[in-house]
Image (cartoon, rainbow, N blue to C red; front, side):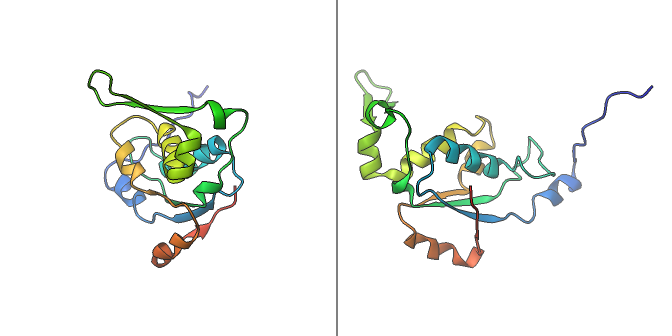
Length: 153
């Protein structure tokens, strides 16, 4: 009788070798539902789909999201969803409806959705740096040197 199958976890130099070779992906957000797009992007940033995924290492890829202003929201979210943050001072609660934020800064809507789906740990900031979100598609030329691959969702 054999015991349970062991999970392989790389250590030391072996783990460092897995860090090399990060891919760049471009995702077109046009017509995509915000939450479903955010989950796919978060998985790419974490590297969950890679066979070399290690929870305590940053082994994810770089992701460029274009056309953030053409994102879709389902249900009544466009009228009901509100982003809140507090300055820490009395009366310092700021509330911004998603309709206003989509008109002024649509890239922030996508960024907030993706960052909310990343684990809240020490790797979060490093993973967040690998996410780039742009309003239109003309900003993609700035990443031409990295040769990003288009990714269909």
